[in-house]
Image (cartoon, rainbow, N blue to C red; front, top):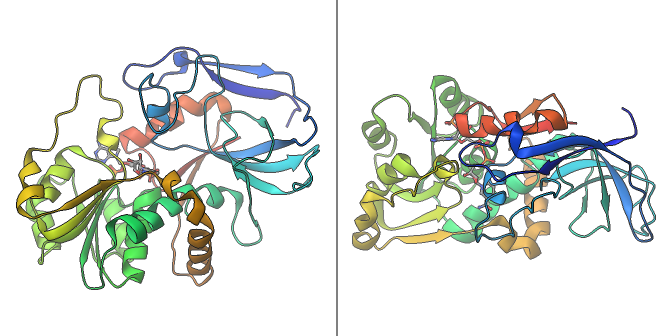
Length: 334
Ligand SMILES: NC(=O)c1ccc[n+]([C@@H]2O[C@H](COP(=O)([O-])OP(=O)(O)OC[C@H]3O[C@@H](n4cnc5c(N)ncnc54)[C@H](OP(=O)(O)O)[C@@H]3O)[C@@H](O)[C@H]2O)c1
């Protein structure tokens, strides 16, 4: 790899799906770290559905990426040229390093990871932010009891796959919703969910009723739209709904209608709560410990979908998330 940076900077805000034209992707001089800083040679960039929202000029839980700024992204890489007392050359680290080959960091929000326990890309996937999202969404937001039915949408993906496996560890009935027979077979046969409903099969409601004979106690929502509405209609009394993501609406150019089955919240006295994984940042060590132990014990089946093409491929590869083109945690190799 040549020692020159290459970065994707936001050039224009998109309408609908991101395109290559929304970014300036170009070579840049390699920056040298100052006192208290280090450089990261990025190996893998995490592609997350939220990235589409980060480029909207709208109020959100983080400020929008500014025009001319390097696209925000979680990434993993190796420390070099360190002038920081706590990070040494050769350390493998994760952090918000951006869509580029090299990043300069002062260590804020940076976590050292152990590549003897899992490959680098897993630390930005099942053992990183998406795994933590699943963990906190269940343990802190939805809080299912043993024996309850937990339904999760986008079940074969980075977050959903871990949600169902943790639900099983918690003694629940885990039911996934995914697109197509191949992903559904993976969810049941390899991840160990009790059932998986193919939302593209044409009989979503009937198939959900069959998969959830006792109704739904906990809905872990990753998608929104028709899937969310259908699940709402099957919720049990005092059910809990964790709103983790609404990916079906992220590229919408027009306002998205609210759920038609809103009434279910009233009559079933549902507890509906949105959350962002960063809400639980002070508890990350606890989640990391549990995820690490389950992984080491072979209780977590984690799949990455690693794509080549480097920084230049960023917009096209990111869009796979919104077109069901990924199968597992989507990662861009740098
Ligand atoms: N709240 C938080 O802090 C937090 C943190 C991380 C992620 N999230 C959210 O969690 C959700 C999943 O993220 P992820 O990283 O795990 O992605 P992922 O599930 O690995 O990939 C996205 C998947 O979403 C499904 N999908 C996309 N468009 C859809 C549509 N219109 N209808 C139904 N399904 C659709 C596709 O699966 P199929 O092939 O099954 O259609 C696609 O593979 C996203 O909504 C994301 O924003 C939230």
